[in-house]
Image (tube, rainbow over all chains, first blue to last red; front, side, top):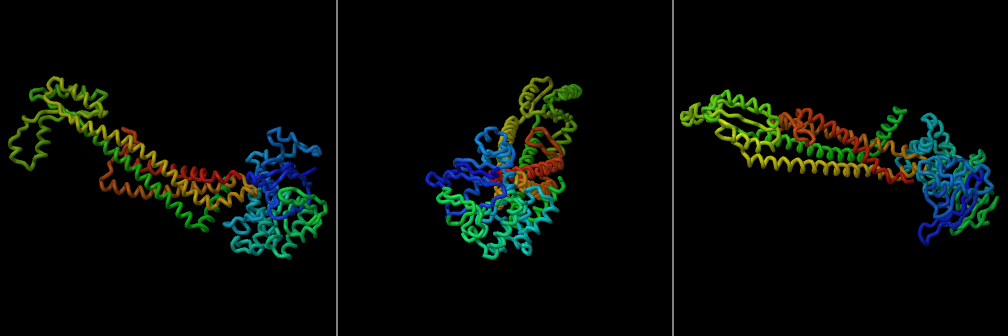
Length: 251
Length: 300
């Protein structure tokens, strides 16, 4: 069953500024998918739409396992190959008060990090757990583990302004992983870190992917894409130009 | 559950204070000044009404009786007047008392005192009305009474009192309402500065799955806390101010309340009411101010 389905997504930021043009694809549960393409191709917008930070001009994104939306019409045009119709929801039909439910199931490593500057490293990671309803004890146990995973154990008391660009990026990854989301979406997660740190991050991503977490990663780094041999979706000028099973960056 | 939420909110306030001391203190300072001005204004409005009430009460009609009119008849009239709903109180001044008053007033004028004997001064009834507006018609009624030699009634003064009393009720009430609105705007803008400084954080928290209540909770608590602390400080300042005025004899023993003519309480009760009102108003203003200021960040 498709865990996520983008259906005919079009996004115009302005009358003559179309960033996504009729994009459709599905992502299966447990898949590892690279989103590649030049800057401005629409990768980040695709990610923003998935957590409903943006709304599309046209199209739908169906998400598995959120439970039915009150409005029965919302499930009317579901893809025919879907087995459990009632567990699929078009995220743009979700009422405002159910957005947290969607977002807690997706861990996002934002391109601009979006770390909380007034909170220290520990607190930044704890926020993701707190909003998911974790107890204080759970937070005290989980946060050190996750910080250890991204190599920030000794920086727990530091504030973002005291961290390097790479460390902030790792903090952003730690926060996205902390509540063990079903889907991890990473927008250029290795853009500011060195090769060694990149390998470490990829190892972490591969490990959690092997445990069943779906990974969607937007990247410019052709070396990673070519080395990992995962599914590659290529976007150019807002259009999906290729979708390869074990693809390479330039295919 | 309630306790842990409270502890969490207090913790986040402590953290906010340790990291952004200036912002917290300036918030409280601005809100305190606003509440002091509001309380001062309210207190002054009440004080002015007390003064007017007191002047109103001093306004009276005096009936002077003919020399030969028997005292028993005057006292019968007094009883009749006391039963009249329009009349607040009646005071009988006998010839002896009138002479005593005259002597007291003119004790430094021996020549004048020698020229006046107690038989010259008439007995009188001093009558105060429940409502200022009834004085005029009462005065007219009294003029036709048997034995009444003269009715003394300062018509112009009473009319002017009435006019100014109305002006102060209306203008004072309006100004208090306007200042309440202004206070809300000031408090909301002040809290908005703190919330705006956290705007990015609120958006981020929403993007990682925080509910509106999770985001709002600490900020509403913060607004409530700032409001209560500021109102408490303002209350202390006002208590000191109004108590000093009272000791200086500028504040009457009683006060009218809420611009309601006729409702009177002791001034210390007024001060307690003022403090309770300020605390309720401060807390409410802080809470609602935060809620309004945070609204724009909840659309994510």
